Picture 1: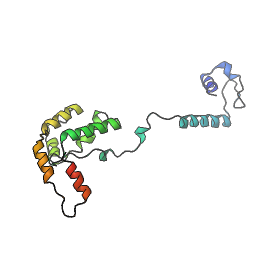
Picture 2 (picture 1 turned 180 degrees about the horizontal axis):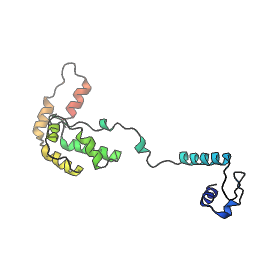
Picture 3 (picture 1 turned 45 degrees about the horizontal axis):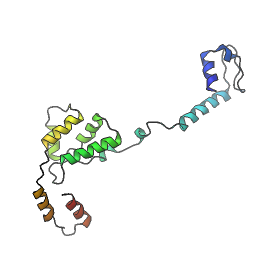
Picture 4 (picture 1 turned 90 degrees about the vertical axis):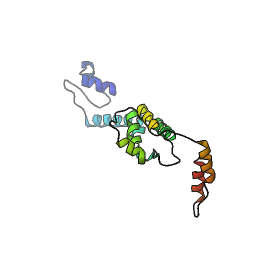
Length: 173
């Protein structure tokens, strides 16, 4: 059917004299029957709905704002290297380009990190440059003795759910 449609619209004289399954008869000017037009649209509709699209993922509504965790350097159990690793993992999973990663990541800076960001003279950096700047601004200085001491000092509080205590205590490691 597609062959005859293309021949008809291209003005092929050989196709002009054919009668195709009762759909149309052509003389000099093509005249299409209503049934033919309906069948063409059905065929197009069927071909569009039967073929999977390559961009199926891009049409899904995902709340990207809640995918990344906040980063606040004042919070004891947060380190910039761990946060950047999570950001990069999300970028990989969701197929984000540099601009998208920067857009979502910079919105998650809190506290001193947000103050630092707002004080910058320029924000025209690629994602690798942002990571370097963040690592330099909020270095990960781990004193393992201090971490061990803090973990040992952490006791369950009155009326604290055991889950909160467990995850906070294991967060030190």
